[in-house]
Length: 392
Ligand SMILES: C[S@@+](CC[C@H](N)C(=O)[O-])C[C@H]1O[C@@H](n2cnc3c(N)ncnc32)[C@H](O)[C@@H]1O
Image (cartoon, protein in one colour):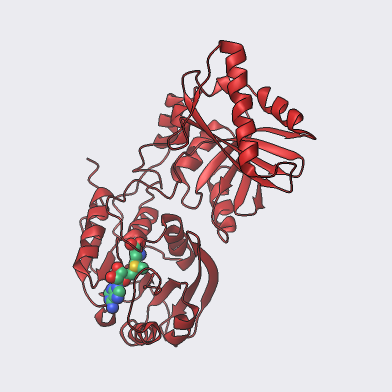
Protein backbone atom coordinates (compact mmCIF):
# COMPACT_ATOMS: atom_id res chain seq x y z
CA UNK A 1 0.00 0.00 0.00
CA UNK A 2 1.28 3.45 -0.87
CA UNK A 3 1.70 5.82 2.08
CA UNK A 4 3.01 9.37 2.37
CA UNK A 5 6.01 10.01 4.63
CA UNK A 6 8.05 13.07 5.60
CA UNK A 7 11.76 12.75 6.40
CA UNK A 8 13.16 15.69 8.39
CA UNK A 9 16.73 16.93 8.14
CA UNK A 10 18.87 20.05 8.69
CA UNK A 11 18.76 23.04 6.35
CA UNK A 12 21.12 22.42 3.44
CA UNK A 13 20.93 18.62 3.48
CA UNK A 14 17.60 18.29 1.64
CA UNK A 15 19.21 17.32 -1.68
CA UNK A 16 21.53 14.77 -0.08
CA UNK A 17 18.52 13.30 1.69
CA UNK A 18 16.40 13.22 -1.47
CA UNK A 19 19.14 11.33 -3.34
CA UNK A 20 19.52 8.89 -0.46
CA UNK A 21 15.74 8.32 -0.31
CA UNK A 22 15.72 7.48 -4.03
CA UNK A 23 18.52 4.97 -3.44
CA UNK A 24 16.45 3.41 -0.65
CA UNK A 25 13.47 3.04 -2.97
CA UNK A 26 11.34 6.13 -2.29
CA UNK A 27 8.92 7.30 -4.97
CA UNK A 28 7.51 10.74 -5.80
CA UNK A 29 9.94 12.65 -3.60
CA UNK A 30 9.48 16.40 -3.09
CA UNK A 31 12.00 18.66 -1.38
CA UNK A 32 10.41 20.91 1.26
CA UNK A 33 11.90 23.18 3.90
CA UNK A 34 14.32 21.06 5.99
CA UNK A 35 12.47 17.91 4.91
CA UNK A 36 11.68 15.64 1.99
CA UNK A 37 8.24 14.17 1.38
CA UNK A 38 8.12 10.75 -0.25
CA UNK A 39 5.84 7.80 -0.97
CA UNK A 40 6.22 4.10 -0.34
CA UNK A 41 5.18 1.18 1.81
CA UNK A 42 5.98 0.02 5.34
CA UNK A 43 9.07 -1.79 4.20
CA UNK A 44 10.38 1.57 2.99
CA UNK A 45 9.44 3.31 6.24
CA UNK A 46 11.49 0.75 8.20
CA UNK A 47 14.33 0.89 5.66
CA UNK A 48 14.63 4.68 5.82
CA UNK A 49 14.64 4.64 9.63
CA UNK A 50 17.31 1.95 9.63
CA UNK A 51 19.57 3.20 6.88
CA UNK A 52 19.21 6.94 6.37
CA UNK A 53 22.33 8.90 7.31
CA UNK A 54 20.77 12.30 6.61
CA UNK A 55 17.23 12.06 8.08
CA UNK A 56 16.71 13.15 11.69
CA UNK A 57 13.24 11.57 11.89
CA UNK A 58 10.57 10.09 9.64
CA UNK A 59 6.89 11.02 10.03
CA UNK A 60 3.99 9.02 8.62
CA UNK A 61 1.15 11.17 7.27
CA UNK A 62 -2.15 9.99 8.82
CA UNK A 63 -4.65 12.64 7.92
CA UNK A 64 -4.80 15.89 5.96
CA UNK A 65 -7.75 18.21 6.61
CA UNK A 66 -9.01 21.79 6.60
CA UNK A 67 -10.90 23.44 9.44
CA UNK A 68 -12.58 26.76 10.20
CA UNK A 69 -13.19 26.60 13.96
CA UNK A 70 -11.81 24.94 17.11
CA UNK A 71 -14.79 22.57 16.99
CA UNK A 72 -14.07 21.53 13.37
CA UNK A 73 -10.49 20.83 14.34
CA UNK A 74 -11.47 18.83 17.43
CA UNK A 75 -13.96 16.74 15.43
CA UNK A 76 -11.39 15.90 12.70
CA UNK A 77 -8.92 14.61 15.31
CA UNK A 78 -11.69 12.82 17.25
CA UNK A 79 -12.63 10.95 14.06
CA UNK A 80 -9.09 9.68 13.56
CA UNK A 81 -8.86 5.98 14.65
CA UNK A 82 -5.90 6.40 17.02
CA UNK A 83 -6.72 3.04 18.65
CA UNK A 84 -5.19 1.29 15.61
CA UNK A 85 -1.74 2.41 16.78
CA UNK A 86 -2.04 3.30 20.46
CA UNK A 87 -3.30 0.94 23.16
CA UNK A 88 -5.90 2.01 25.76
CA UNK A 89 -3.36 1.67 28.53
CA UNK A 90 -0.49 3.14 26.49
CA UNK A 91 1.17 6.55 26.66
CA UNK A 92 1.39 9.25 24.03
CA UNK A 93 2.47 12.84 23.38
CA UNK A 94 1.58 15.48 20.82
CA UNK A 95 3.98 18.02 19.34
CA UNK A 96 2.83 20.83 17.10
CA UNK A 97 4.07 23.43 14.63
CA UNK A 98 1.52 26.11 13.70
CA UNK A 99 1.78 29.12 11.43
CA UNK A 100 -0.82 31.83 10.75
CA UNK A 101 -3.61 29.70 12.25
CA UNK A 102 -6.67 30.48 14.40
CA UNK A 103 -4.75 29.06 17.37
CA UNK A 104 -2.88 31.66 19.37
CA UNK A 105 -0.13 29.18 20.28
CA UNK A 106 0.96 25.72 19.02
CA UNK A 107 0.54 24.54 22.62
CA UNK A 108 -3.20 25.20 22.42
CA UNK A 109 -3.46 23.07 19.26
CA UNK A 110 -1.46 20.29 20.98
CA UNK A 111 -3.83 20.33 23.97
CA UNK A 112 -6.90 20.24 21.75
CA UNK A 113 -5.40 17.30 19.83
CA UNK A 114 -4.64 15.47 23.06
CA UNK A 115 -8.20 16.08 24.36
CA UNK A 116 -9.79 14.81 21.13
CA UNK A 117 -7.68 11.61 21.20
CA UNK A 118 -8.44 10.97 24.89
CA UNK A 119 -12.17 11.69 24.48
CA UNK A 120 -12.39 9.21 21.61
CA UNK A 121 -10.82 6.47 23.75
CA UNK A 122 -13.08 7.32 26.73
CA UNK A 123 -16.19 7.23 24.53
CA UNK A 124 -15.26 3.96 22.85
CA UNK A 125 -13.60 2.00 25.66
CA UNK A 126 -14.35 3.80 28.94
CA UNK A 127 -10.62 4.30 29.52
CA UNK A 128 -7.92 6.47 27.97
CA UNK A 129 -4.16 6.39 27.45
CA UNK A 130 -1.91 8.67 29.52
CA UNK A 131 0.18 11.55 28.29
CA UNK A 132 3.93 11.07 28.77
CA UNK A 133 5.94 13.97 27.36
CA UNK A 134 9.34 12.47 28.15
CA UNK A 135 9.07 8.93 26.87
CA UNK A 136 5.78 8.38 25.04
CA UNK A 137 4.97 5.06 23.40
CA UNK A 138 3.30 6.86 20.50
CA UNK A 139 4.33 10.36 19.39
CA UNK A 140 1.87 12.36 17.27
CA UNK A 141 2.92 15.47 15.41
CA UNK A 142 0.50 18.01 14.02
CA UNK A 143 1.53 20.59 11.44
CA UNK A 144 -0.85 23.52 10.91
CA UNK A 145 -0.60 26.21 8.28
CA UNK A 146 -3.53 28.66 8.13
CA UNK A 147 -6.63 26.42 8.03
CA UNK A 148 -4.85 23.26 6.86
CA UNK A 149 -3.64 20.58 9.25
CA UNK A 150 -1.63 17.40 8.76
CA UNK A 151 -1.57 14.75 11.46
CA UNK A 152 1.54 12.57 11.56
CA UNK A 153 2.83 9.64 13.57
CA UNK A 154 6.53 9.94 14.41
CA UNK A 155 8.08 6.60 13.43
CA UNK A 156 11.59 7.34 14.71
CA UNK A 157 11.18 8.28 18.37
CA UNK A 158 14.54 9.68 19.43
CA UNK A 159 16.27 11.65 16.68
CA UNK A 160 18.03 9.40 14.18
CA UNK A 161 21.34 11.19 14.74
CA UNK A 162 21.48 9.09 17.91
CA UNK A 163 23.05 6.13 16.14
CA UNK A 164 23.69 4.07 19.26
CA UNK A 165 27.52 4.01 19.18
CA UNK A 166 28.14 7.08 21.36
CA UNK A 167 29.01 5.74 24.76
CA UNK A 168 31.19 8.74 25.53
CA UNK A 169 30.19 12.28 24.64
CA UNK A 170 32.84 14.84 23.67
CA UNK A 171 31.90 18.39 24.87
CA UNK A 172 32.07 19.74 21.30
CA UNK A 173 30.94 16.61 19.52
CA UNK A 174 29.71 17.12 15.96
CA UNK A 175 26.20 15.99 15.09
CA UNK A 176 26.29 12.55 13.42
CA UNK A 177 24.10 13.70 10.51
CA UNK A 178 26.45 16.62 9.85
CA UNK A 179 29.47 14.31 10.10
CA UNK A 180 27.89 11.88 7.61
CA UNK A 181 27.18 14.77 5.22
CA UNK A 182 30.78 16.02 5.54
CA UNK A 183 32.08 12.58 4.54
CA UNK A 184 29.69 12.27 1.58
CA UNK A 185 30.34 15.82 0.35
CA UNK A 186 34.11 15.24 0.51
CA UNK A 187 33.74 12.50 -2.12
CA UNK A 188 36.08 10.13 -0.22
CA UNK A 189 36.49 7.02 -2.39
CA UNK A 190 37.65 4.52 0.35
CA UNK A 191 40.90 3.83 -1.56
CA UNK A 192 42.87 6.64 0.00
CA UNK A 193 43.52 6.98 3.75
CA UNK A 194 40.99 9.00 5.71
CA UNK A 195 42.37 11.30 8.42
CA UNK A 196 40.64 13.33 11.11
CA UNK A 197 43.53 15.27 12.69
CA UNK A 198 41.34 16.76 15.48
CA UNK A 199 39.07 13.80 16.04
CA UNK A 200 37.65 14.49 19.52
CA UNK A 201 35.13 11.71 20.24
CA UNK A 202 35.65 10.18 16.78
CA UNK A 203 32.26 10.94 15.16
CA UNK A 204 33.60 11.79 11.69
CA UNK A 205 35.87 8.72 11.63
CA UNK A 206 33.04 6.41 12.66
CA UNK A 207 30.60 7.87 10.13
CA UNK A 208 33.25 7.55 7.39
CA UNK A 209 33.98 3.91 8.27
CA UNK A 210 30.26 3.11 8.40
CA UNK A 211 29.76 4.57 4.92
CA UNK A 212 32.77 2.76 3.50
CA UNK A 213 31.73 -0.61 4.95
CA UNK A 214 28.04 -0.14 4.10
CA UNK A 215 27.02 -0.32 7.77
CA UNK A 216 23.45 1.03 8.05
CA UNK A 217 23.20 4.23 10.12
CA UNK A 218 20.87 2.49 12.59
CA UNK A 219 22.93 -0.70 12.93
CA UNK A 220 23.83 0.01 16.59
CA UNK A 221 20.53 1.60 17.57
CA UNK A 222 18.20 -0.25 19.92
CA UNK A 223 14.97 1.68 19.69
CA UNK A 224 12.61 3.21 17.16
CA UNK A 225 9.26 4.93 17.65
CA UNK A 226 7.38 2.31 15.62
CA UNK A 227 8.40 -0.52 18.00
CA UNK A 228 5.51 0.48 20.28
CA UNK A 229 2.85 0.94 17.60
CA UNK A 230 0.09 -1.67 17.72
CA UNK A 231 0.63 -2.38 14.00
CA UNK A 232 4.40 -2.98 14.39
CA UNK A 233 5.35 -5.83 12.03
CA UNK A 234 8.31 -7.60 13.67
CA UNK A 235 8.75 -10.00 10.81
CA UNK A 236 8.92 -7.23 8.20
CA UNK A 237 11.35 -5.29 10.41
CA UNK A 238 13.67 -8.29 10.60
CA UNK A 239 13.41 -8.79 6.85
CA UNK A 240 14.21 -5.13 6.24
CA UNK A 241 17.38 -5.29 8.35
CA UNK A 242 18.48 -8.44 6.53
CA UNK A 243 18.38 -6.57 3.21
CA UNK A 244 21.66 -4.85 4.16
CA UNK A 245 24.96 -6.64 3.62
CA UNK A 246 27.87 -5.15 5.53
CA UNK A 247 31.09 -5.26 3.50
CA UNK A 248 33.48 -5.83 6.37
CA UNK A 249 36.37 -7.24 4.33
CA UNK A 250 37.16 -3.98 2.55
CA UNK A 251 40.67 -2.72 3.39
CA UNK A 252 40.08 0.85 4.56
CA UNK A 253 42.50 2.85 6.71
CA UNK A 254 41.34 5.67 8.92
CA UNK A 255 43.55 7.70 11.27
CA UNK A 256 42.44 9.89 14.16
CA UNK A 257 44.57 12.36 16.12
CA UNK A 258 43.88 14.71 19.00
CA UNK A 259 46.21 16.56 21.37
CA UNK A 260 44.12 15.72 24.47
CA UNK A 261 44.38 12.11 25.73
CA UNK A 262 41.01 12.27 27.52
CA UNK A 263 39.30 12.97 24.18
CA UNK A 264 41.20 10.15 22.49
CA UNK A 265 39.86 7.89 25.27
CA UNK A 266 36.33 8.95 24.28
CA UNK A 267 37.03 8.22 20.62
CA UNK A 268 38.42 4.81 21.57
CA UNK A 269 35.29 3.95 23.59
CA UNK A 270 32.96 5.00 20.74
CA UNK A 271 35.01 3.18 18.08
CA UNK A 272 35.03 0.03 20.21
CA UNK A 273 31.28 0.26 20.70
CA UNK A 274 30.95 0.44 16.90
CA UNK A 275 33.42 -2.48 16.65
CA UNK A 276 35.54 -0.52 14.17
CA UNK A 277 38.89 -0.67 15.96
CA UNK A 278 40.43 -2.76 13.17
CA UNK A 279 39.87 0.08 10.75
CA UNK A 280 40.66 3.21 12.77
CA UNK A 281 44.04 3.96 14.37
CA UNK A 282 44.21 6.64 17.07
CA UNK A 283 47.27 8.58 18.23
CA UNK A 284 47.97 11.55 20.45
CA UNK A 285 49.39 14.26 18.23
CA UNK A 286 49.24 18.01 17.67
CA UNK A 287 47.52 18.53 14.32
CA UNK A 288 50.30 20.88 13.28
CA UNK A 289 52.81 18.01 13.36
CA UNK A 290 50.66 15.31 11.71
CA UNK A 291 51.81 13.94 8.37
CA UNK A 292 49.85 11.48 6.21
CA UNK A 293 51.08 7.88 6.15
CA UNK A 294 50.32 7.72 2.42
CA UNK A 295 49.35 10.15 -0.27
CA UNK A 296 46.84 10.95 -1.48
CA UNK A 297 44.85 11.06 1.76
CA UNK A 298 41.49 12.59 2.55
CA UNK A 299 41.49 14.92 5.57
CA UNK A 300 38.10 15.82 7.11
CA UNK A 301 37.79 17.60 10.44
CA UNK A 302 36.14 20.16 12.64
CA UNK A 303 38.62 22.33 14.49
CA UNK A 304 37.50 24.23 17.60
CA UNK A 305 35.29 27.16 16.58
CA UNK A 306 36.16 29.15 19.70
CA UNK A 307 32.57 28.64 20.99
CA UNK A 308 32.54 25.49 23.08
CA UNK A 309 36.30 24.87 23.18
CA UNK A 310 38.53 27.90 23.71
CA UNK A 311 41.81 28.37 21.89
CA UNK A 312 44.05 31.33 22.78
CA UNK A 313 44.05 33.14 19.45
CA UNK A 314 41.61 31.67 16.94
CA UNK A 315 42.92 33.62 13.94
CA UNK A 316 46.52 32.59 14.58
CA UNK A 317 45.44 29.00 15.25
CA UNK A 318 43.55 28.78 11.95
CA UNK A 319 46.55 30.29 10.13
CA UNK A 320 48.71 27.53 11.62
CA UNK A 321 46.14 24.92 10.51
CA UNK A 322 46.34 26.33 6.95
CA UNK A 323 50.16 26.32 7.06
CA UNK A 324 50.22 22.72 8.32
CA UNK A 325 47.82 21.58 5.58
CA UNK A 326 49.95 23.25 2.95
CA UNK A 327 53.31 22.00 4.22
CA UNK A 328 52.45 18.49 5.44
CA UNK A 329 49.59 17.32 3.22
CA UNK A 330 50.57 18.05 -0.35
CA UNK A 331 48.83 15.72 -2.79
CA UNK A 332 45.88 15.41 -0.39
CA UNK A 333 42.42 16.90 -0.13
CA UNK A 334 41.21 18.59 3.06
CA UNK A 335 37.71 19.56 4.18
CA UNK A 336 36.88 21.43 7.36
CA UNK A 337 33.78 22.81 9.04
CA UNK A 338 33.65 25.91 11.20
CA UNK A 339 31.24 28.59 12.34
CA UNK A 340 34.10 31.01 12.95
CA UNK A 341 34.07 33.08 9.74
CA UNK A 342 36.81 35.44 10.88
CA UNK A 343 39.17 32.63 11.75
CA UNK A 344 38.38 30.78 8.49
CA UNK A 345 39.76 33.73 6.51
CA UNK A 346 43.15 33.07 8.12
CA UNK A 347 43.47 29.54 6.68
CA UNK A 348 45.09 31.25 3.71
CA UNK A 349 44.39 28.51 1.12
CA UNK A 350 42.30 28.65 -2.04
CA UNK A 351 39.01 26.76 -1.59
CA UNK A 352 37.84 24.22 -4.18
CA UNK A 353 34.53 23.61 -2.36
CA UNK A 354 32.22 25.80 -0.28
CA UNK A 355 28.85 25.05 1.27
CA UNK A 356 26.83 26.42 4.17
CA UNK A 357 25.88 23.56 6.47
CA UNK A 358 24.46 23.16 9.94
CA UNK A 359 26.06 21.41 12.89
CA UNK A 360 22.88 20.91 14.93
CA UNK A 361 21.53 24.46 15.33
CA UNK A 362 24.86 26.15 14.55
CA UNK A 363 25.25 27.58 11.04
CA UNK A 364 28.69 26.74 9.65
CA UNK A 365 30.82 26.89 6.51
CA UNK A 366 32.16 23.71 5.01
CA UNK A 367 35.30 24.38 2.95
CA UNK A 368 37.36 22.04 0.79
CA UNK A 369 40.97 22.51 -0.34
CA UNK A 370 43.00 20.76 -3.06
CA UNK A 371 46.46 20.46 -1.61
CA UNK A 372 48.12 18.73 -4.50
CA UNK A 373 49.97 19.94 -7.50
CA UNK A 374 49.64 16.85 -9.70
CA UNK A 375 46.99 14.23 -10.33
CA UNK A 376 44.88 12.76 -7.49
CA UNK A 377 46.07 9.21 -8.21
CA UNK A 378 45.05 6.08 -6.29
CA UNK A 379 47.24 5.25 -3.31
CA UNK A 380 49.94 2.62 -3.49
CA UNK A 381 50.17 1.45 0.10
CA UNK A 382 50.15 -1.18 2.77
CA UNK A 383 47.24 -1.41 5.21
CA UNK A 384 47.11 -1.24 9.00
CA UNK A 385 44.30 -3.61 9.91
CA UNK A 386 42.92 -7.09 9.41
CA UNK A 387 39.51 -5.67 8.51
CA UNK A 388 36.82 -7.78 10.02
CA UNK A 389 34.06 -6.39 12.14
CA UNK A 390 33.85 -8.54 15.22
CA UNK A 391 30.06 -8.89 15.37
CA UNK A 392 29.77 -9.93 19.01
C1 LIG B 1 35.38 20.52 17.82
S1 LIG B 1 36.32 19.28 18.57
C2 LIG B 1 36.13 17.88 17.52
C3 LIG B 1 34.91 17.08 17.90
C4 LIG B 1 34.79 15.79 17.13
N1 LIG B 1 34.59 16.00 15.71
C5 LIG B 1 33.65 14.93 17.71
O1 LIG B 1 32.65 14.72 17.04
O2 LIG B 1 33.74 14.54 18.86
C6 LIG B 1 37.95 19.78 18.22
C7 LIG B 1 39.03 18.88 18.77
O3 LIG B 1 40.28 19.41 18.35
C8 LIG B 1 41.23 19.10 19.35
N2 LIG B 1 42.37 19.98 19.15
C9 LIG B 1 42.48 21.31 19.43
N3 LIG B 1 43.69 21.76 19.08
C10 LIG B 1 44.36 20.70 18.55
C11 LIG B 1 45.65 20.52 17.99
N4 LIG B 1 46.50 21.55 17.89
N5 LIG B 1 45.99 19.31 17.54
C12 LIG B 1 45.15 18.25 17.63
N6 LIG B 1 43.91 18.35 18.15
C13 LIG B 1 43.52 19.56 18.61
C14 LIG B 1 40.48 19.31 20.64
O4 LIG B 1 41.11 18.62 21.70
C15 LIG B 1 39.09 18.79 20.29
O5 LIG B 1 38.96 17.46 20.70
